[in-house]
Amino acid sequence: MTERVTVHADTPYDVVIGRDLYGWLPAMVGKATRVLIVVPAVLTHYGTAVREVLTGAGYETYVAEVPDAEAQKTVHVAEFCWSVLGQCGFTRTDAVVAVGGGATTDLGGWVAATWLRGIRVVHVATTVLGMVDAAVGGKTGINTSLGKNLVGSFHTPAGVICDTSMLDTLSERDYVAGLAEVIKTGFIADTRILELIEEALAESDPGVASDAVPLSCDDAPAEGLPVSARLNPVLPELIQRSVAVKAAVVSEDFTEQGSREFLNYGHTLGHAIEHHEDFQWRHGEAVAVGMVFAAELAQVAGMLDASVVARTRALCSAVGLPTTYDGAWEDLQDAMQRDKKTRGHMLRFIVLTAAGEPTRLEGPSEDMLREAFARIAA
Ligand SMILES: NC(=O)c1ccc[n+]([C@@H]2O[C@H](COP(=O)([O-])OP(=O)(O)OC[C@H]3O[C@@H](n4cnc5c(N)ncnc54)[C@H](O)[C@@H]3O)[C@@H](O)[C@H]2O)c1
Image (cartoon, rainbow, N blue to C red; front, side):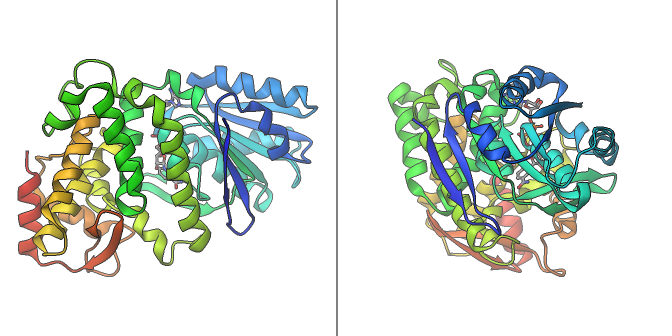
């Protein structure tokens, strides 16, 4: 079954979720003559499948094969894509289709945003993180030597395809890392997401869900069936619900002036950990630790019941996400102060008052921060 969620951004667009969805491409690409498919070389087979559909529909197609993961989010790779667009005569009415994970939709989106001051882009998201987060919402960007995502723009896609059959080839580590954003969405807005995961894990192996212990990033995955296999029956609903929450928030606050900030739950410490670990951790792994920290902080501040903290830890552990961290607090604090989302010098966190009830906590005391950090120490 195909689900469709409409995002009411500056121009409304659809996110479609299901299997075998290539047939949606021509309608999303629309009246373009030429289409540039931006795809990492390691995912060429998906780029080829997209190209066949578009060529069959009468488009003039070109492929820009780019490096993998963060290596593609550079100005040099963007310049390579611009040169292909220029040499192939792309005009204002032509289009880019980005096929890949969040790194590719960020790059492809930014190339489309900047070519001739903005041409149409369609995202074909191929990771869990891309489907529930990066490809939905219109943020695009690249990294610079000074940091991640420092150069970018808001550029609304013409459509987003979340074809879950593509996840069959995704590594278990990337699948699980993407689940952190799904769990985050459950805690900030849609608690049915949390129940779906808990139920699916309990049904497939009751012992692991209830007896799970905190894992560190280096721990072996839980024994038995991989988490991806155990969650696959509910994955389409998890993606659809996560996209629906992001769509609602983005529709209300496209340029991140207000409620969109709630999507950053777990990200304040998470970004600091990513930085401290030289980006060797997956984003979702760092966000999982950040969520446990934010839950502990809210509990220390007297805002959140201990049962929600325990639920956060149990859910992250059960899917194989880390919940502890052994870095130095002072280093993380410095990184949080430098984060572009910090306002002035005051640290602010998105915290919960209950599952599904996010709020802001501004300027928590040093004692509170240290106590919360001590509780997540490895
Ligand atoms: N724009 C936004 O709002 C937003 C939000 C969150 C994250 N992001 C960005 O997203 C990026 C992280 O996204 P990601 O985790 O998807 O990373 P990614 O795009 O680097 O993909 C992770 C890895 O999975 C591989 N892969 C992708 N799809 C696959 C598939 N179907 N089968 C096999 N392998 C596959 C990729 O080749 C890569 O090695 C970061 O750059 C982050 O800054 C952007």
